[in-house]
Image (tube, rainbow, N blue to C red):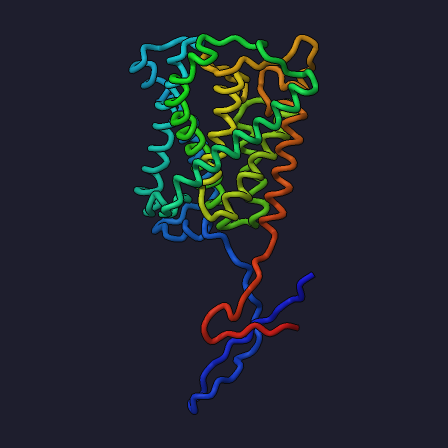
Amino acid sequence: MSTPTATVRLTETASGSAQPAGPRRTPRPSSGLLSMAGEARRKIPWWIAWPVSLLIMVGGGLVGTQIGNIVLGSPGDGSPLAQYGEVFSFGVTLLALFFWVRVVEGRRIRTLGFTPSKGGLKKIGLGFLLGGAMMGAGVGVGLLTGQLSFGASTHAVTGWGSLLALLPLVLVFILQGTTEETLTRGYMLQSGARSMPLWLAIIASSVIFALVHLSFEPIILTNIILYAVFACLVALKQNSLWLIAGLHAGWNFFQGNIFGLPVSGHGYATSLLSVGPSAHSTDMLSGGTFGVEGSVFGTLVLGAATLIALTVFLRRPRRKGADRPGEVMIEN
């Protein structure tokens, strides 16, 4: 266990010698993800920002869906083309958020959590693979226990013939994951943490994220809240949304377009595999028509991920030397 530290600021006297100005409490380090929002010329309070976020989420989705229907010709749910409608629903939502942040708040879009980084795309790619691995773990347990089985779901395009169709769908899910993470772990978390304790901003924004999925089964709500808390911790530790946006995309893509399971209750026409609940399965274990997020196996995966993320988040980096020039760290 590390010992507490105190910081003493040294001030220079007229003779040039350094004298201690008295002890002061070292402030708790804040996440760069949160401090980025301080650039705003107009700081919108959370009780306005959060309803605006929901309005953007719902309104952008509805408007984007209508635009998509016009462009794509209103494809039915069973059509492979229907999934591309999400480009319009999530695209309009993200653009609406960008407009609000840039014009109303007066800050740069990148302050939502997309810090300039040469490794940004690599982090999205790494997150995508991590999300796929997490989903693979949940599906793997389902297959091993007999709750899920191959050939238990139907799709318009499946097998090796779906590979070409899957490539552009990766980009669709990256847009989807980026939009949801930017709204919640970006804008809502930043706005909430400005005027409430960080833990409360994490919990409150996570509960809202779960509720907007409009499925109120206890296990589903629990799992989505677990994911949201996990996502907050990852974003805060990373000081950006790059990694978690990719992870979100990978989780959904592998669930819906690789394994063929519903994604938060939505089935897709294109999938490499045809995994689904077996004939003797129970919804609590298989996830039923909701997908892995509705299963106990999802709880195990997300619970473990959240515990790991919390441990990493709370781990304090070892300090080397003084915080700033003119300060020294004195062990008590």
